[in-house]
Image (cartoon, one colour):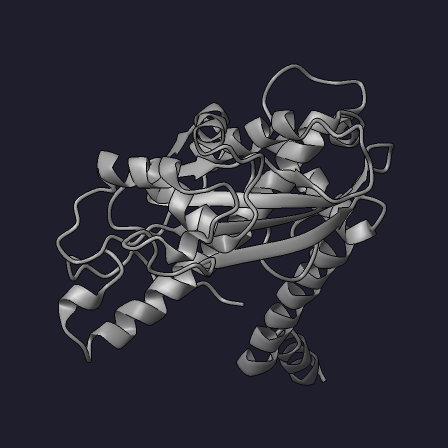
Length: 295
C-alpha cells in the first residue's frame, strides 16, 4: 500500500513536455491578445506611427532639398490661415532625416517673380521646383476643416520631383529669364527644356477625423512623444490646440509620402538591375536604402 502511494505522489508532477510548451505558448498569445484589446501595448493591429521623438528618415542615398508651396484651401471655410499651416508643414519636412527644406517664403517670392498666385497645374509644380533649385516640391490642399473639438481635417499632399536632363547641372538664369518672359497663363509644358514629368511621384490624401476611435488612439500614442510642458488636458491637448493637431496631420501625411517614395525607389532599383545603372533615380547606380515596408 505504501509503495503504491509513493508511486502516485512521485508521478503526479510529471507532465508531458509537449503539453507544457503548448500551455506556455497559449499563455503568451493570450497576453498578447489582451494587450491588443486593452491598449496596454499595441493599440491597433498594424504599424504604429512613430512617436514625435523618432525622426522620419528619407529613403534617398544622398540628402535632398525640398520646397513647400503654400497650401490651397478648398474646404469652404474662409478663416483658415493656410500660410501658417504651410509653415507648420515645412517644419515637419525639415525634421525629416535626409531632407533639407526651403522656406515657404522662398516659394512665395518665386510666385511673385512669375506673377502667379498659386500652383495651377502639375507642370507648374515641377517647373517651380527646378526654378528654386530644389530636388522636389510639396504642394497640397486642405479640402475639409473643422477646428472645434473633436477637430477634423482633410488634406492632400503631393510630391513633385525635379529631373535634370542628360548633361544638365541646374536650371540656371537662362530658364529664369524664359519663365519670367513667358506670358501670364502660358502653357508651361510648351517651354522647352523645363519639364521631364509633370506627374507627382507620390500623393497622399486623407481625412483625419479625431471623433473616430482609431484616430484618437493614434493621437494618444503620438502625444506620448511630444515634449514641452505637461498639460492638464494630457494627450487631449492635441485635440484642443489646432497647431498641435495640424502638426500631427502633417507628420502622418509625410509618413505615408515617404513610404510611397521608398516603395517607388525600391521598384525602380529592382528594375534597374536589368537596365544600365544610369537609369536609377539618383543617376549614380546606387540602390536606395532599405526594402519597401510591409503594407
